[in-house]
Image 1 (cartoon, rainbow, N blue to C red):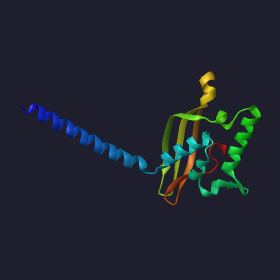
Image 2: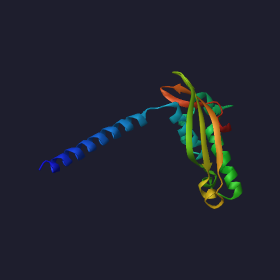
Image 3: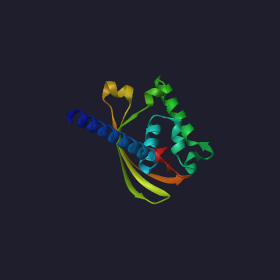
Image 4: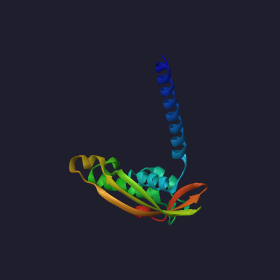
Amino acid sequence: MNEPRDKIVTVTLIFLLSLFLQIMFGFADVRDTPNKAAAEFAKAYFCFDKAMADRLCEESKTADDTDVVGRYIYRAENEARERGYSLFYMKESLYHVETHLLNENQLSAEVRLICQTKPPLQSFFTKKSSEVDETLRLKKENGVWKVCGKPFSL
């Protein structure tokens, strides 16, 4: 007679535990870390997304009074246009992203990023992919981790 009640209690406890874990994992994902910043920057960089500037430190945003991100995207657009394509042809997606924190203190960090890049349109036909193995320098600006230097030869 207690069997249906025991099942209901068990299912309820499992549901509550899974809800608690989901909330905890959600809070952990919101926290900004050097690894997360490096991966977000790399994704934006290879997709030619202007949002990469949000993860780039102030000292790296300009070179000789020129917007580095704008110049990078402009060159990619021109290269694509010369080939007879849009910028979408040049974009690459990241796969198998691994980040390794090499060193970190409160204001700076070094992260090694290892991943594969594949251009979605090209790789469908040619199976083309590239390996990326880059060490990125990061520093904390206004409580947010940002990539510094010339990552990926930006």
